[in-house]
Length: 113
Figure 1 (cartoon, rainbow, N blue to C red):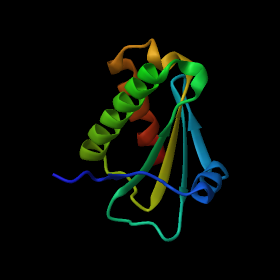
Figure 2 (figure 1 turned 180 degrees about the vertical axis):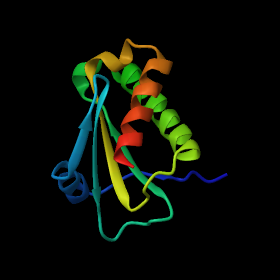
Figure 3 (figure 1 turned 120 degrees about the vertical axis):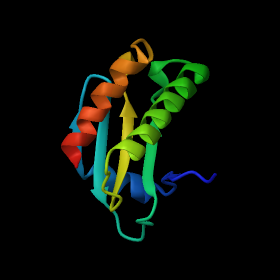
């Protein structure tokens, strides 16, 4: 089964997303913007963790958790596929329970819709 999540690759895509709208919570900041030349049949999403958060094992665990949450959101909520999303994880996301993070990000994507 092919994934419906596509990661951003180009530096100019990241820079243009940072100039778009944002939604913040205590676990992450979500930037979103409509980018031209992007596939609208798949979810364009990138997840960023800073080196301050921890070593590579912890950062990869955070990315896996957030990617899993985004797969659940994609299946349950009607997300606007015309937008591209950038999720920047915050420091306390590694210490919190998975379910707490999931409910907060679900609320944020409900607001974005």
